[in-house]
Length: 396
Ligand code: ADP
Ligand code: MG
Image (cartoon, rainbow, N blue to C red; front, side, top):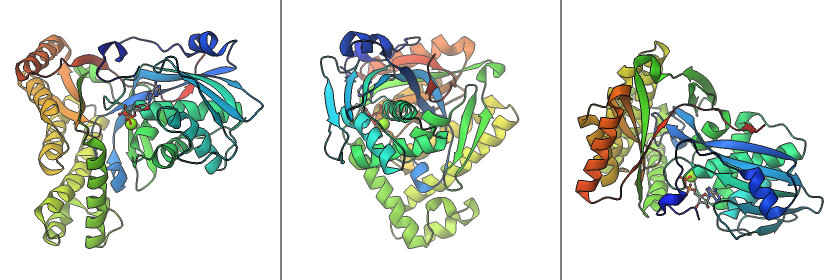
């Protein structure tokens, strides 16, 4: 099962999903087509998407793959390689949020969300197999939503633009599954391109693919999956959102991203409590850091983004308060061992750290992080190198 506590269920570098094989073995016969969508890391721009701000994610080479075959009875039949022994059947006619819970809700919700946004979604047999580890902050959920929605739409003869696919996937997660996430994960999974980071300005509804090739600077991006997943994550996420929305209302702006850096002090002076001031300061300064990183990447100065990554982590730890001991230990150990930059990536309270490391120091940095985890009594982290991959698409 896709259990964060089971090392055998974690993605390992180079693993490939085998949805067509699963399809034949469990559902019988051959699929009509196979699609996939990736997990993602966020280089910088955390907790800014639901504030209509700036994010800079990229897709990674861990993917959810879906093998699919049309049915003419309006039903979905779904299996997952990460949920062995379970076959879930759903009638699409009259399907409403709440009707399917658990992992299959992400899949059924894709059909529901397609219909809700005016697309076609026919019945199908569907086998899902994913190498994106669950709960590692790499958005296994968006990978499932995007691959499934793409498969069902294509089967029904609809072609969705990447942004529309992302919006369908987000609607699935927000309304069918019931998680109040922003649009970053789904956009990254849907619209990413190999060799680039996705600069997404949520408020302006604008995307740009910025070349990102650390190798040109002798660097690699090391991902540290802390294996920690603290249960307070969901409630705290909703609370941060609510605080940000309330602060925007107090300040008379439609989102915190409307506040320019030069207006920050005046905005903070207009807020009543220190906690809210720190939350607002994070969002405004984080947008600014994304802007700065984009400008550096445009000039090819990859190594120089390190300090912005470090500042982002400090802001998430001290002002937004979404880090945790495992994330802080991983960042501190990586930096102490010579990483050019390191920060938590994803929503926080566990999940992963992304570090920018000299290629010839990567073993040293990895060993330093692993050693620091052992000394702290944490579960051993999982290390892997990542580089920007393509977003959702047809496989083969
Ligand atoms: P993440 O940070 O990995 O996106 P979430 O809690 O948002 O974590 O989503 C994880 C959930 O998505 C799982 O608990 C499961 O319900 C669903 N999921 C992800 N991958 C799979 C898979 N391969 N098979 C079935 N369900 C999956
Ligand atoms: Mg998720």
